[in-house]
Amino acid sequence: MGLGGSATNDFGVGAACAVGICFIDKDGKEFIPVGETLSRITRIDKSRLLPDFKDIEIVTMCDIDNPVYGLNGAAFIFGSQKGADARMVEFLDSQLCAVSEVVKRDFRVDVSMMPGAGAAGGMGAGMVVFSIQNCSLE
Image 1 (spheres, one colour):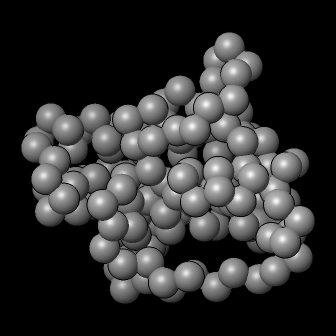
Image 2 (cartoon, rainbow, N blue to C red):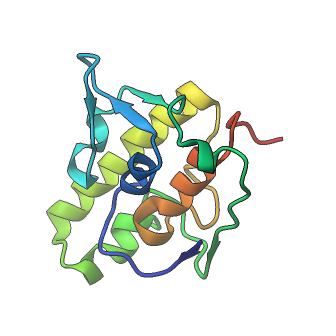
């Protein structure tokens, strides 16, 4: 998977939904998150991953080393290139931070400062989280 420029800032959740990963809100309802609703995710269910994706290796490549959020993260560095103003950049950054915390809590994977995690609007982070079966890094 080659990650380059992106018009999204969604941590890769759109792609994850397409392969069967489910996102649950505080009311226990499944929903399809977008960049502005990442903070609504309270649980991520990977149990319905489509069978064709369970036993394949996905190699992800990118040409940046930016983290997923923070002053050098996806929203702050690339958001304005995609048309986000300063207020929107801060909001999008907070959304990426929120989903990163859910991932850290539930899968014990801290992608927040992982080099390349901010590629393609945070899809670098999503590719790590959603493609590792047990979501732990040794």
